[in-house]
Length: 231
Image 1 (cartoon, rainbow, N blue to C red):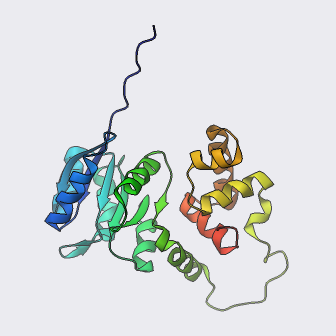
Image 2: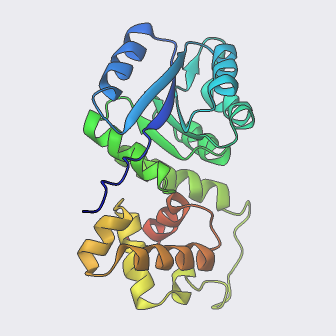
Image 3: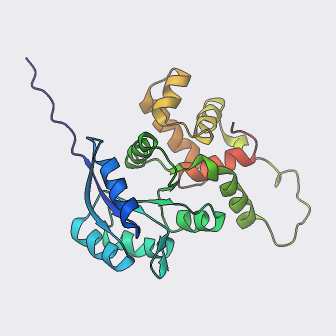
C-alpha cells in the first residue's frame, strides 16, 4: 500500500490594511481555507515592512490606502523586504492610475474589496501558480490605461507593416489560448475547454507571452482585448 503523500504547506499570507474591522474580518475569512494561513497583519507601511522582513510570507494582501501613504508606493519596498513574496492589491480604489501603477510596480494582482471569499481564495491560488489576477470590473480601465500609456503624442500615418496586429504571429492554437487568458480563465479551465493537458496550456502560454513580448497574463489580456479577441 502506497503511503499517503504529504499535504502541501499552506500559503503564508501577510494582511496589510489600516481598518481594524476589515483586517480582522479578512483574517477570519482566510482562516476558513485549509490551504491558506495568515501569519501576520499590519496597519501601516512601517509595520508592514517590518512584518514582511520578519515573516517572509508567500503572499502579501495590500490595501492601497494606508496612513500617510499609498500602498502602491510601498510596494517596491515590500518586494525588497520579502523578495519571494507575491503582492496582490486588495482595495476599494477603481482608479485606473492606481491599477496601472500597481502593475508597473510589480503587483501580481489587483482585486476589489467587494470580492467574494471563494473568489479571493481562487485568485490567491492562481497568483501562487504564477498567474496574474485582476478584478473583472477593472479590465476595461486597464485597457484604457494601456492605450493611454502606449499612444503616441502626435499621430503619424502608419505603413501597412506598422499597422499589423501583434496577434498575427500567433498560431491558431495560441490564439485560442490567448482568448482564454483574455476571458480570465485559468490554465486548468483553458485545458478543460480545449480538451488538452494543463501542462500543454502552460507551454502555449509561455510561447504567447514571448511572442507578444509581455511579462504577464494581464498584459497579454490587455493586448488581446484591445484587438477584439476577448469576450
